Length: 458
Image (cartoon, rainbow, N blue to C red; front, side, top):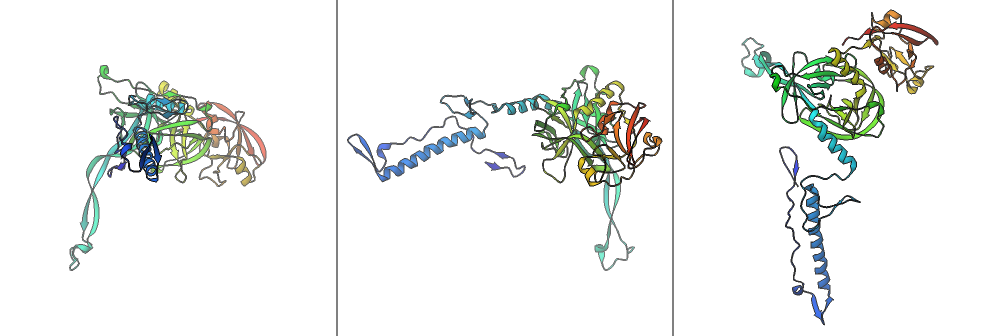
């Protein structure tokens, strides 16, 4: 193998040769072999030569197997153990043959659905900064000369530059695309989607989820004659509620904003995770009830699909841990189905709203803070039990109802609030202007209040 100095990719220096043959050796001429009445007598010299001969033959055979293996060209599969067998007169197959059922499913899922995964490139006009120098001494800098000139910068026009990138996937043949909201934060920017066949199209933002890190774009074919407009391949949406820890998953994305449709494979490492995610431009949000996976999720993978072995999208890749290895997170696809339906019907995404900040109480949080319950939504507190900047938003439905800091909402319309069934998940079953009952623990007493849900703004 040799290394390409430019890109560190590896390539074989020993391609497979079909015409391999073992070396021809005349045993009768080898020194150390004595013929005695038609029998071969093994002298020390003969044994040495025989050992060398076996090593040569075995080495040659090993080289053949190695070459076939590294070239991914397998001949005549030994089905019980998946061992490649080279048989005389066999024809080399050009296509790789998977050795396991799981590998076959991964390859099929990627082949079938990667055409529906797009790379999203964000571009905008940015100022061109011109460097110049000023003399702080007003021209009296002699004898110091240019050494004491102070550099300054000024704008000299603008130029179009790529300022971001992400991933998305097509959910309908008209080019509707699901991605992360944080991929679409740039204002006054141009969004371009690239397909893995090399084609590209402008895209426009249809709607942004005011609650979750989700956004919907659409390929813009308004400048294309109607007869020439393209229909696009789509993904198949799965059911994230049926996920199991340890289940194999596949992530596809625009890794590092450079490597289009990169594939990584892992397992579901955890379910129902609650995290706080931060990003560029001060973007920060609480993500509740999400999927943890060890499949590699790199910058640029945001908004890409997480597939199961059937090729169904069961998650939208959203974040990764900056302090740990192989810790990534995806939004369950069931969270996005509501958005997809709303956009199709109304072109917008709306959510009910209470107007509170809170943390979900777990057994650990309860014990650390001497709470009398180990479930519920603790108003005005973070996961460490510290005060949040705002507990109840002024003018919100919660404020009008009189909800206070340190209140614990135990139930939402009769449904118990837990880390497995957080408030953010429960409220999705309701709409703005719905009336619901809240069971609240306040000063060690249970009270029930009725609230009219508002509409959450982005």
